[in-house]
Image (cartoon, rainbow, N blue to C red; front, side, top):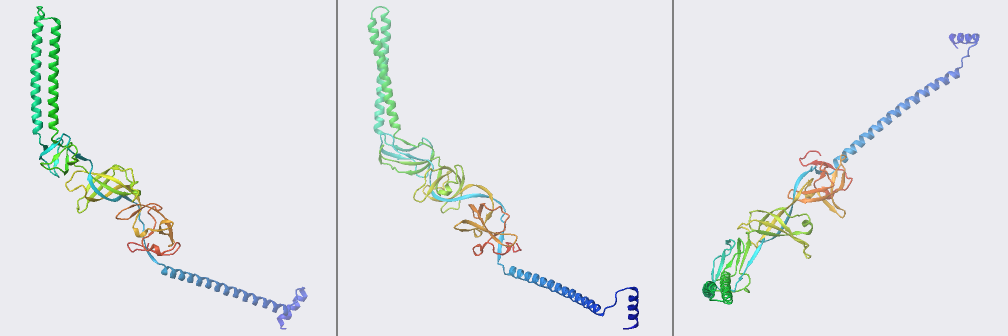
Length: 401
């Protein structure tokens, strides 16, 4: 104990203060040292925890970066919306739209002359062939003579009646004689009419020996030659395409036929020709062939020498327009659940999207249901992806998607 301690102890004793205890002082020092150790340990622990979290974040970032680098690169496209003119392809044979068979309508006879040939354009009423009429000409002359005889008899009967009427006033002829003469005059006039009717009939029969075109058009067939004997049972002697109009009997599948309507336009290309002809559907046949499940769309075409009946041609029929996204065939996939595409989300993961397709064109296939056109669609290799898989999208221009 030094002097200061002694004085403090004495002052404490004198003033009634607490006496100094060396053990208590050591305990207080030990508590202060332990507190400092705990604080230091807490600081060190906090630093270690912070470092652990930092290292964990760096590791996760590295893993994420590694995963991003390992994700497959896919090409994506945002199709937007396009106005598409729908078209249906079909094939068929060319034929006359209205085919007119022409035969002998009179008594017939030996063919004297044929005035037309296949491929000629004929007008309505034009003489196609002339049949020998020498017999009919003689019959016609005889009937003309009978008309003259009947007219002479009628004139004589009229003269007799006129004279009788003058004599009856004088009382030389009775009323009964006048009536008889009147009847004779009327009978003679009637015989004139009969003879004239017979002559007119013979003239008509003679005129029918000419084979005439019933309508203007293109002569497709000629089955008659000079010297041939023809009659009502000789069959078809000529075939005419009325107005020269042609048609394509386009064979269309049952599903596509339901999309067409009368008046739809079409482009027809004959086989072996690069020339295209514009036409339109004028009739959809109401029946479907049970064998191949196809129907016939009849496409009317104007006259053109390049259109030959019996030839084969292809057609592109306009089936209407639609505004919808359009995708190439490579972007569309299908399975037992139907047609679908893979859409890449903002998180880089692919998701399946069921769609319904529409028109098929040379530029792609329209999607009429399931897309609005703003999505990022996997363009290729969709068959190697799975829903939920992370990918690295790249646009067609090579930029990051």
